[in-house]
Length: 254
Image 1 (tube, rainbow, N blue to C red):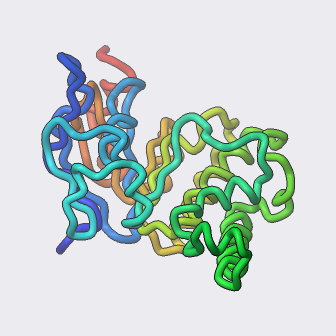
Image 2 (spheres, rainbow, N blue to C red):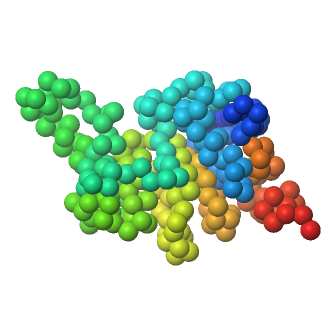
Image 3 (cartoon, helix red, strand yellow):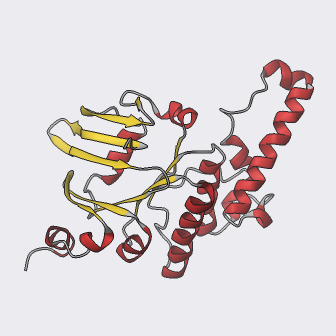
C-alpha cells in the first residue's frame, strides 16, 4: 500500500545538535498522525523539515508518490500540503476575510493585466476567492466575524483563523503545530474536536503536534512519540499511553 506521506530515516543536524535523528514514519489518506514528546524533542523541527522550512541533512520524504525532500515551504501548497505554525502568523491589522483571502494568492488565476482592467476573469476570480474564504471561515465557526479585525478577536479565535487560512488551499495533508497552545481546557477540547470534524468532512490527512496528551490519545489514529530527536515509540494510542519509554520521557525515572 502506498502511503500519502512517508518519511525515511529523516535527520536534521545543526552542527553537533541532532535535532531530528533518524525518524521514519508515514501518514495515510484520511488518517490523523499525532506527534508527541517533551519540550525540545524535535517535533516542530521534524515538521519544518517536512514542509521545506529546513532541508533535511539526510533522509527522504515522499508525498503522493513524489520525492519532496528538497522542496521549499512556498511550493508546498501547490502540491496539497498546508500547515499552521506554533506562533500565530496572522495579519492583526487586517480583517478576518482579508487574512483568508491573502492565503489564496497562489491559486488566483487572474494576472496583473486582469487586475488593472478589472476584467471578467478578475471579477470571477475575486468572487471565487471570496466564496472559498467564506466556506473556510464557516467551517471553523468564524462566519459571524468575517469583517472584524483579526487582532481584536480573542486568542482562541485567532488560532481558528489560522486553520481557515490553511483550509483555503484545499490541502490533502493539513499539518497543525500545537493548535491548542495558550488555550484553556474547554477551548482546547473544542479546538481538537473542530480539527477532527474538518478531517472527517474534508476527507484529508492530518499531522498534529500537541502537548495535551488526553486530547491526543482521544483523537489521533496513530501516534509517534519522540525524545531528544529520536523515535521512542510509534503505534496506536492505547499502545503509546502504556509504553514505558514514553512514560519515562514525560515523568522521568523513579
